[in-house]
Image (cartoon, rainbow, N blue to C red):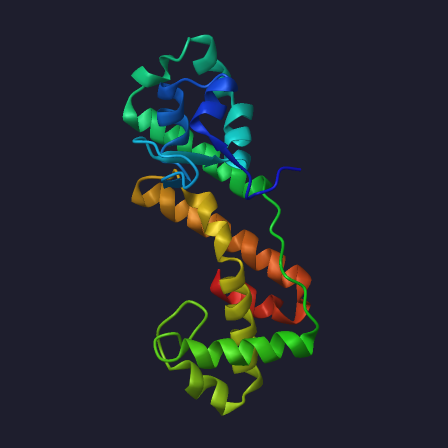
Length: 202
């Protein structure tokens, strides 16, 4: 199974049969972009998540573009955006969500510390509302459940990188909703006592 943090360079994509037009239309923006610290170059380093690349390569659109000799560069932007949306959703459905598994007492300890460090403006796992110190200080069991959930969701934020490549408000909202559902389902499976709180956000 592909490591979700493995990346492919633009040159690596070309070796896999991608043209620059196919990269632009089927993958969109790179997942990581910057300068190579080991070698000076005018061009920035562009890296693409291998899991996302492989998901697109399995889609029929990729084979059609490859057969057309890179004709994806001439595809209308709306069609290209739809292809990227489908590719991102495919990755989101297939990518395993690995939740850190902690003893309950340790999770509670970390959750309380997370709530206190978050301070005002983070009164719920989704942000906003009553300050963290106030909620945790109340000592209610419900507050502790919410802070465990908030801590775990924060720990899983690196999965947000899977959303890269989706453009347009509707497509982005759909992808974010699917990711939230996958994350909450994984948390509920790892920590059954948080299942009701996970369902509450959907």
